Length: 145
Figure (cartoon, helix red, strand yellow):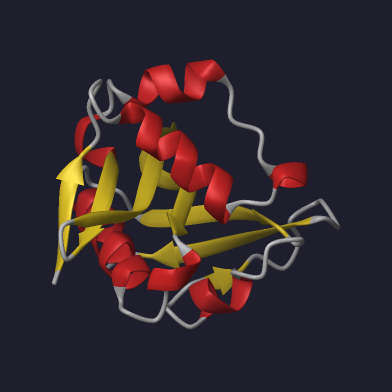
């Protein structure tokens, strides 16, 4: 059974551990400010629990461009032993629902190509921008209805 719960000051360190376990060190670049701001964004940061064990997390950021809201996924990770159970999909569903609640027209993620998660996002309704401007990064977008 998968359940989501908020990140708070008592469990914030778990987000750092999940990021360490799911994002390779050479591309992981989260500052102390990133974690501090996590406590102020409410439902845009969530943990995923599988049978009462915290196994994943998502952290997003709301942006406004040309008077239009967008939601960027800054990190979404599931511990390797718990992949293939739908945990990541549940976190992504939460992101999409949160985006709709804030009136966002799209959700996007900027992925270093060193990560092997591009196909995972493409298989869940994201499309790749044809010109991301960076050969080492892919920008994937999910347009909301």
